[in-house]
Structure formats: structure tokens, C-alpha cells
Image 1: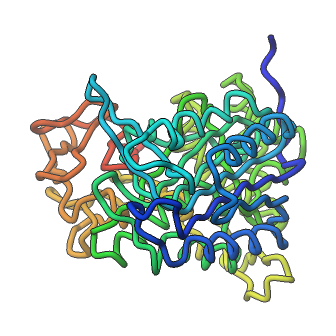
Image 2 (image 1 turned 180 degrees about the vertical axis):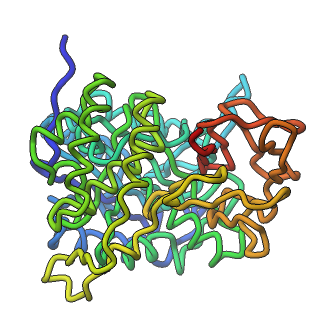
Length: 446
């Protein structure tokens, strides 16, 4: 059986939205805004620019049978290039089985307390991904479950422009298993606020998860931390909510160049970069080429391709007066290309390069003999992401180059997948993991 070839677009969009305020059994505390949030989210998703075909199950309609029946219709009624969003706002809980493995449940309106077979097991709800043909399926639960109950893995990094051409099965939950999800001022309110005014940014499930995690964590004072990630079967795609013309990457490039830059053969990608360089100053393709090259410099599996992409980004510098104009209908002012964050032009010192989903690539030269790195503004290198500790690590000049050590961070520091327990020497192109952020260490050319 050959793997399907997906389009860089969606053919159709389907949303199943479930919201329950009042349950049949009083043991489930009434909720005040789950049904209102679900109605409002459906209104936003059905309208432009999203244009989802929305099915709602609210209150008494959201029985266990009705929910599974709606999921079954999605299994039978979607095409290969469709996207499917499944949303639930209501009560959820996590149990440990006899093997001490966490199992997540959703409570339907007719779920009987302490009769778990009358609830919806998370694994059963997410089984839809095994039978529906849709390439992208996302689950949003405004209820609390641990990452292990959801079966989450770290987000998979792929070059920009391939989100829509690979399968993606992703989950976003309002918080961890031991954290109560707020009913009023819920995560969904923040989600609706963002979707109502997407601006000019590409909104994917990954970037949405990062933004909501920071927003909800800050708003709740750390009492509620949304969980998000990929689940089994995902192959590096990314559910795209919104892709403005200026944010669409390789699909807006000339077809021959697009195919070469994303080809599985590293040699073709390497030689395609030379042609991509000629488009950097092109008013139509320049911003897109820069975005693609930044992703290749960070994530391409071939070292020679990464180095070639870095070289293309360093030279030649862009003219200061070159302006990229956004789509006129946005009503926003033109953005100068000098505002786009790029790696330093001259590599006379080692530096770090990283990209947080939803933001531009960022870089920091290693100019001191000892430099702190973390989320706190007082650090020498600041990475603003909730998974990065305030003081996460320390970089220091060693006998042969820079070294890194962890400074008691919450999520630890890893180099090329191995946790750091003392000082670890860095070599060119090493991948440093700080929480959920991957930082690339780059040495100057010889």
C-alpha cells in the first residue's frame, strides 16, 4: 500500500463541538459557560476565514451514544485532504489502572458516577484518527488530563511548507490531571479571542498550544497549565487553523523550486538553495524564501544542507529599503524586511539559533566567557517560553569551545537527546533541548 500524496491545501473542514453545563447526576458539579463557549466557538469556526462545517452537541444532546455516533459519521464522511476538529467542554477525569498507567475519561451528559464504562474513554474518542481519512485531526479538551493520559509526544519539527502535506494528529488539553480547569475565563475564551482576530500570523495547532500555554499559565498564576502535543500516528504535519497569504511558505514559490527544496534527496535540496538565494530580494517570494531557509538551517536532517542554508541567509544582506507589503485587505502597514529576525550576518563568534512556533527565528551570539540562559529578562540570553525555567542553564568558554550545564531547571537540559548532568562540551550543530525549545549551537566557519 503506497503512502497518500497530500495537497498543500484543505478540501473540506469538519468540526464536532460538544459542550455540557448540567449533568443528569448531581455528583457532577454544574458548569456555567461550557455550552455558551461551545456555541460561540462554533459561530467563529463556521464563518470566514475558517469555514468549518460545524456539528454541535449541547447539554442533553451530548449523550454517550450521540457522541460516538457523531464520531462514527466523521470516520465515514471525510476525505484525504480534509481537516477535522473535535472539541469537548465539560467534566473529565483521570484514573490509574492496575499497572499504574493513567487513563483519561470524558463525562457524557448521561455518565453515571463511578461507572466508568458509561463515560467516554479518551483512547476510544481518539480512535477516530485510525479510521477517518482526513490528513489532519485535532482534539481540544477544555478539561484536565495529564500528558501521559493523553498519550502526548513532543511536537515534531518539519520544514515550513510541509505541514499540509503530512498527517497530523494533535491534542490540546486545558491543564494537567491535578489542575482544575477554570469554567469562567476558560481556555476556550482565550482560544475564541485569538481566532476572532488572527491578524497576519500563521496559526497552527503547535503555535496555538504554545500561545495558550503561556496565556493561561500566566492568567492563572501557574495553577492551570495547558498540555499539548502529537499522538501516535502523527507524521510531522501540523493542523493549520489559519494561513494568510503572507504566511504561506513553500506552496507560494515557483513549483520547480518548491519541489526541489522539499525533496527527500538531500543533494537536490542542497543545490536548490542556490536558486532560492536569487529570490531573496524578490518582492513576491523574498519573505517566503527566508522562512524556508531558516527552517532548513534549523531542522534539515542533512548537515551539509543546514550549513548551505545558513550561508544563504548570511549573504548578501538585504537592501534596507526593500519592503514586503502585506495583503491589502488586512489594513496593516507595510513591514520592512529589516524587521524580520535573521541569523547574524558574519559568523566571527559561536551563536545560538532557535525558533518558537508562531514567532520568528531568533539568534544570540556568545560574546562572553560565561553567559546565563533562561526565561528571566536578567539572563544574558532570554528565551521567552513557559517550558524554559527563569534561570535554565549556564554557557561557559572551555578549553576547546563552549560548554553548557543545567542550573536546576524544572524540565532539564539535554544535548542531542542526552540529559546534561554536569558540564557538556558543545560542537557545531549540536541540538540543545531547553524544555520544549530546541536551540542549535553554531560555530563560525573556519
